[in-house]
Image (cartoon, rainbow over all chains, first blue to last red; front, side, top):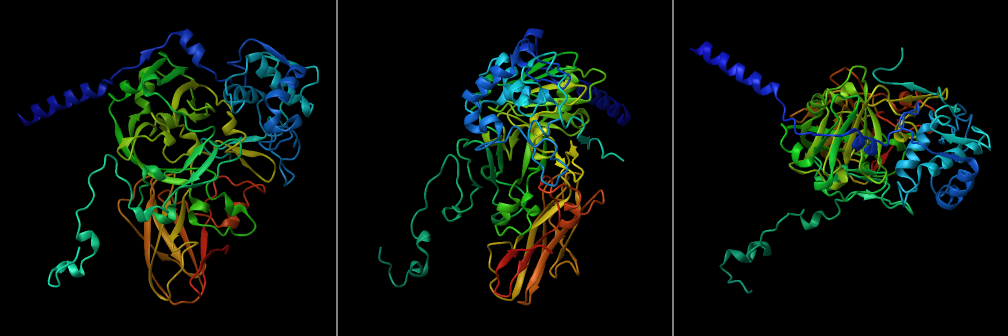
Length: 172
Length: 387
């Protein structure tokens, strides 16, 4: 009798554990497309559109320069340009251009978080343009560059190979 | 009111001689505790960006009161309507799903005490001279709460993770849409979608209506106001895992995805700003923690590290939670240097400050876990010192 009860209990417990509430609402591909603002280093997630260095310069002067200084030289907020080649000098100047490994990160971050007082207000073309402008200051892209979903992920950042993954464990 | 000479009220304090105040809907600390506050400086032009620090030296035990939990925001605290907030899981899954707050409340929940520490905590220790500031100013970017919520693995199983997936991109619903890449392995392990903090709904400063809780991982990746989890093959190199929270080494390369907050401890009593009231008995009291598990021991030195004594650990000693240590100390009134050195259950021991610094390029301040020291002067003042 004891054994029989124990088995019954175990069966019930197993049945209970096998089920989870499943209360998620199924999303349509269109809903996912609107929500997904992630841009990967390989360019996955980049939207249609394009922007030139010159268009970016005009937008930067109007919407970014007040915080980040002329040509992104910094002050009062973060420095965005310069510092290329400084990382091993003992006086590293870490900027998006000198430090970040992927050009796509500039697009991803500007589009989701900038300008600070009006995030998510720039059009996709404007974000491409501002990204192109920032990368042009230190010559990472030429002054006549136009960035889009194809050309942006192809930009070779100065510190592309400068990061060492510490997960799941430090390299041996 | 005049008291008759033979009533006991003549010798009683006034609060025993008049009815006390009535009830309140949400109680507040005692009036005399009004100095126990988070400290912060808001940057000009961006009032919602930066940090506020837990007054660790003014608290006891291990649980941080909700109103004193440290804060780190990237563009302020969003005012989220929970009825319009959903957690979306998509990407490399068989079924993209959206969970309302109401739906998540119906899931099986679990409760764990866990610390959260900003990887920038104690970064001042890289300075050439010791910072003369309170333990909170130096070490206040750490807090510990009892978190309750839904195991993330349950939700990921419902969505059905596709083969080849290794990462989950988490995103918050703040004005910075703060985003981080999280190892899938961690999401399927002890990760929780936290809905409650110390028994009440999670505070807006901590992510209301929900935050990602990744026990033992650096604070920033415990994404607040969590709205979206995208399952991917590779990390995204988000701004806050490249620009910030990466550790530059002397050769110019940087460590990326060093998530775990290593074993660490701090003495809080005595600490800077307190004055010893002459020779005699004192209890040395502090906190220890490790993102890798439980604290196994804390040693305390009163002679600058020449000799060490084992401190008592207040039970319960929990994994990835703050542990309170205490040691009785008979101060002889002579200059002394107090230090604490913690070891966790994996055998990891806190390094010296010098050994820690040697790993990194100048100016790199994330993940400092070196041994800290307080100098007690003969006049009883307590200073921050380097040994």
